[in-house]
Length: 336
Image (cartoon, rainbow, N blue to C red; front, side, top):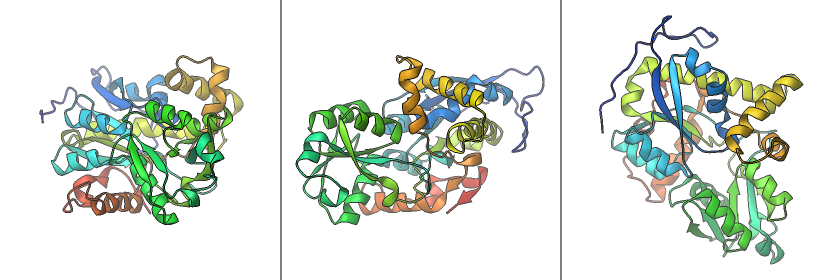
């Protein structure tokens, strides 16, 4: 693992402050942020577009990925400095090797807020897969073994007493294609992807992930162990990210922002998540897909522990990995 060289001197910022973390006139620290083109990554996009990262002394470049595990590898190799994605077996193994740390929370399932959906292919639905209790003997799409899709699918199947076959397809786009063509029977995914698929009659919604995993910490903020040791820079990143999350929640989750602000947030997100679509085509996916982003990057420690226990029980990570190996929660509040 390469050694991180600090490229600037950062000061601390209080949770509610909006003052620059750098002293006036200091050079911005260049960082690469890993992201997926998902609505759930909107806080980083908002922080970049609204200057929150710059005010925190950071010059951000986005590196886009198509799955969580390659992003974890990029963090460990320091090709990316910070990222937001689900906990995976790959991330846990890298943490065990001292290469990565979870430092905060991102997307969460929350009671009363529409969350991730369980989908059936149209062919499987017409053949009787009309709810998750009928998953026995079916195929479930995942990106990779040890992905969050694998975790969700296993938890859902176990709760229903079902035996399912998991089909790794590497990329989200490939899973979507397999679901549309009936090559897989089922999948679970965030609502901004699930609802358009159902709306286009390309798949059927048969359940909610929150029914099986209430308060699930869907994504986390993570970084390299070296960057976690650079507390000023990491705190600066989390403060800017949290400001973006607050704007997102106000506009699209709590609906406490005015209409002009809501429209501005939708337009900003569309430019990143749906760059090739007209705004009007992207609007409904963004609005219908908004889930809670944890305020101030708070982390649901209980959910993280449950995920870690599942990965160990499945033999996907070493039995000796502890919560403390995976997580440095000294930057944020923890919840359960």
